[in-house]
Image 1 (cartoon, rainbow, N blue to C red):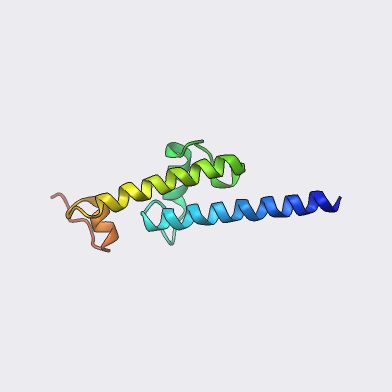
Image 2 (image 1 turned 45 degrees about the horizontal axis):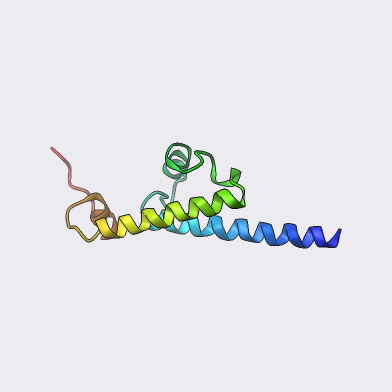
Length: 100
């Protein structure tokens, strides 16, 4: 029916918006690299709240995942204020010096 189509369309729009927000945050904090999905997909499968691919999350799970990413971004921003740590190097676009 038309009502179901409207609901499905609105739900799909919400799913896309949450996915977009998550990817934007992930890119800002270095979990998603501009030219690769490997690091992001690995993080999603091992460290995310539901431990599954981004497209496999329902709306409720995406909302929880977005909260997780917003918290991670807050922690990242706090860490990036301290010179010399990984977040600081990433935020300032510096290469991390070698340990040798």
